[in-house]
Every structure is written in C-alpha cells, then in structure tokens.
Length: 355
Image 1 (tube, rainbow, N blue to C red):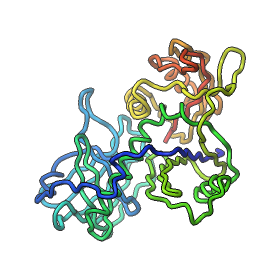
Image 2 (tube, one colour):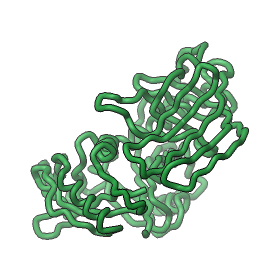
Image 3 (tube, one colour):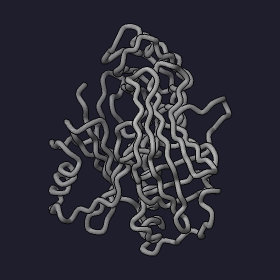
Image 4 (cartoon, rainbow, N blue to C red):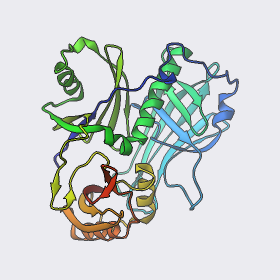
C-alpha cells in the first residue's frame, strides 16, 4: 500500500507552557507509591521509547482493552496488550523499576514475550532503559527520559510533550485553520527544510524542540524557527509528503456535485479520534480468517451527520470488506462538516486495520 506523510505546521500562540523559567512541581519522596497498581499506557515499555503517558483504566463499560502496565510493590513491572478477540498478537514486556532521587525512576527491561495469532517468542535481556522523570497532572502521569537528571530541562520537555499532545487531541478542530499543500520530499527533515526555504530560512535556522511518535505510525513534531514555534505532523511512511499552511477562508473548496471532498472543518466522530478508537474496539467484529492488512472505506457524512453512500475504496478480502461496510453503516451520527457557518455534506475516507 502506498504510504504518505503529512506535515502540519502552524505558529503556536505564546502561553505559559513555553516560559523560560518553568515551575518545578513539588518534590515527591516516594515515586513508587505514586505508580503502584494497574494503569493504561500509550505504548508498551521497550528499547526505543522516550516517553510514556499512563492513566487509570476506564471500566465504565467493562474491561478497558489496549495497552496496560502494572507496577508491583516489589519493584517489578509488566506491560502487556489486551484485545476483545483472540486473533491478535499479544506482546508482554517486563522488568524492574527503581526510584533514584526525587521524581525519578530507572527502568531495566528483562523480558519480552509474544503470544497469540503471530510468531511466538520469548527473549531474555538485561537492558537499562535509562532514567525517567515522573510528572503527574490532574488526569495522567507522564514518564519522560531525563536530560541527565536536571529537573528544569525535564520539565521543559514535559511542557513540549503536553503541548504536542493537546495539539494531537485537537487536530480534528485545528484543520479549520490549515490547508493541505504538497511538498516533494522523502523524509521529515527535508520537508521541513523545503517548507522554510520558501520563507528564506536556512536549515540552521530550524530547531526541532521535541518529537512525539504515536502508536499508529504517526509523529508530532515541535519545530522552532527564528524564535517562533510550529507544529508538524507526519504519518504512515515517507514516500509522499506535504504541509498544512494557513487556510484562505475565501477560497473555493473541492466539490463533486453537492458533496464536498475537502473543507476546513471536516466531519468527525463525536469526541474525536480517541473515542472513535474505543468505539471500534468495542463494536467491530474481526473475521476469524487470519488475514492482515487494511480496508479503506469511503462514505458521505451529510449535513445531519448521518452516514450515507458507504463503499470500499481499497479492499482486502470479501469477508473483511463486508464487515467494514456493515460497521460503518451502523455507526452513530458524526459531527457534520461546517463551511461558512453551515453544515454541509462531505465525502470522507477512513482506514480499518486488520492485524
């Protein structure tokens, strides 16, 4: 499948998150007590990850599937993946965590096992993953790899990360401020350079402040140029690349008949992507045929938010295709697209992965 990569850039409005003198949170003398128990985690503990966000599971509708981590009182941890069906791959990572000073822990990865509907494996190791700063806010705990145990620098990284997370969560609504523009490039750094070359910037003018890789092959990057910060987004590979630039609200938008194919405020699932992912995990039936890949489905979200004209744009297998169409047709109303203050019908494409 041809992959593409998008970059989303926009000037960040100055706020307290980027203060030159960040406020250090109150020292915590027992980080282990803060972490004890079972949590949801955005990514399993592994060799490459530099930050993790954890929160308490939501058991309102039963078991909260996805990635979990358990911190045990004896200084051991286990991070593992759960799913509602058995035809999936179930990795588990485990090891030790040790408190070092105030607000810091060190992870040591001991074992990685893989079970389920994929090649099984069991790998032993003794890998020091480094020192992580522990930051707690009102809803989450963030674990971020430390800059030599210097709290001021670690808190600045936390602020960059939280800003990118807020941007990621608000991306559905941020599209109203940006417009897609293709850039011929094969990697993120080259695309960023090409974009700023149009504004007479040199490569040395550009500084990557922080990069956040998401679980679905997406990256969110905070870039600084000439004292201003810009958001970037990339996803699904490096073959095609583009940039979002500020939208001209007076331009004519793409339209086929009475149906738009792109407008600044595109339709979206109520609550955003994170709620959509939970809805899929609870309501999608994965056929027991061991086929892996992706079905790309297209549909129209009309001015009332109803799903219409569902079709398979790129199929995978007749059973997978049929289940995808059934699922999309039974979805609740979306938030319709809006143009010039009025709801309009918009064509939308959405991929459903089979793993």
